[in-house]
Length: 74
Picture 1: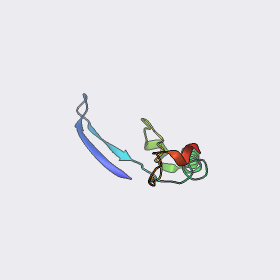
Picture 2 (picture 1 turned 120 degrees about the vertical axis):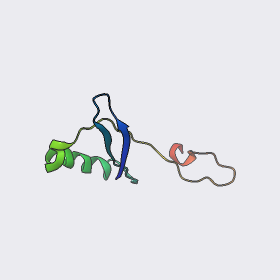
Picture 3 (picture 1 turned 45 degrees about the vertical axis):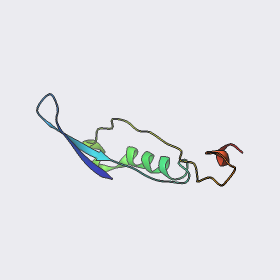
Picture 4 (picture 1 turned 90 degrees about the vertical axis):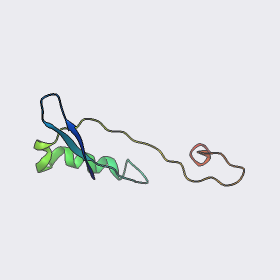
């Protein structure tokens, strides 16, 4: 997790929060179950406001003669 502070909002309240970043091999078996468990029963969920999420695929490095993402498509 990483915290951020971005000044204050239009109401004069501190615009701050946390970023949750996870690097996982398989989101279906690692990331999604954890997020689901947190959403269903974490005691701090009452104090959390979810504003967005994203999932990115990062292809492995390439060897000579190959192209970026080749391992994902072959």
